[in-house]
Structure formats: C-alpha cells, structure tokens
Image (tube, rainbow, N blue to C red; front, side, top):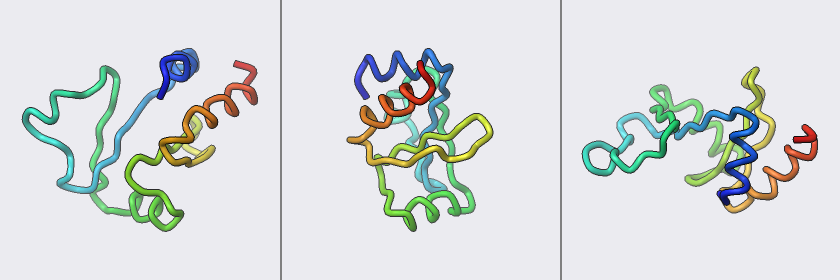
Length: 93
C-alpha cells in the first residue's frame, strides 16, 4: 500500500487486521515486525479462510469491510490502490 493510500485509510479511521490459519500466526522474532495498530487474529474454525479461498482469494488478498462488517470488496493485494481510490470517491473522502 502506498503512503497516500494509507493516509486516506487513516482519515477514515480504518482498522487493519491480518488473518492467519489456526496455529499459523508468527511467533518469536518474526512477530516483532508488526505494524503499529495492526490486529492479528487466527481463524480458529477455518471458516473465514475457506470462504476467501472459495471466492478465489489467496495470501495477500485484501478485504475491505464496512463498520457493520458487510464486505465492501475483496481484491488481490496489487489492486489495493485502485480499490482505495474507488471507495474514497464513493465516500467523497
């Protein structure tokens, strides 16, 4: 994500989350490289990751969810700048 993209998301008071499969969250030294404000969770049931895979999403995909938890869109990581511009235009942000 570019710095301007990140700044736009921060203006919207966005929260960021990384989802790992159960038991897949990095531990030790690898865990220290986290970004400030990033929430990390493990998908204990596997349902979220299965749903993402069933819709063609893999590692690096980005899910944009509204505050009511409705999924606005899901894109490949390389498409986040385009999705950022689209949602900011729709919100007049």
